[in-house]
Length: 215
Image (cartoon, rainbow, N blue to C red; front, side, top):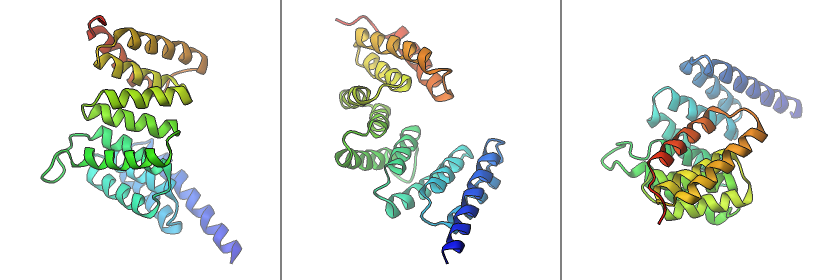
C-alpha cells in the first residue's frame, strides 16, 4: 500500500511538471487538464490547485480561477500560500464585475487576508499581498503600515517598490524616493529582476514622476 501511494504521488508530481511545460507554451487548456489530473491523483495537493487557478486566470477565465481558490480556501484554510495567492488574484481583479456587486472579489480578499494576518502576523509574503490588495482597493494608510512591517521583516526589491508606490500615493515623496533607491540598490545585489519586479519598478517610477514634493 505504501508503494502504491508513493507511485500515485510521483504521478501527480509528473502531471504538475507537464502542466507547467504546457503553461509556458500558452497551451492553457492542456495545462489545466494536466493540473486537474494531478489533483485527481492527490486531492490534497494545494500546489497543483494554486497553479490550476493561475492557469485559468492567464487563460482569461477569472471565474474558474475564483472557484478553484474558494475550494482551496475551504479545504485547506491553514495553507498560507493559498491565502497569499488568493490575495494577489483579488488585487488583480479588485473591481471585477462579478455578480451584482463589482466589489465582491475585493471584499472577499480583504476578509480572507485580514483573518490570515491575525493568525500569521509576521509572514512578510502575506503582509505584502494584503498591502497591495488594500492599495488596489483605494486604501493608503493600512497598506503602508503592512508594507513597512513586511519590509522590516524581510526586504525584497518588489516590497520596497510597493512601499514606494504607496508612499507616493500618500504624497510622502521623501519616503517614496528612499524606498525606491533602496529597492534599486538591493536589486543590483540580488541579480536580474523578475517580470514582477520590473512591473512594480515601472509603476514606482511613474508614481515618483507624478508625486508632488512632500510638505
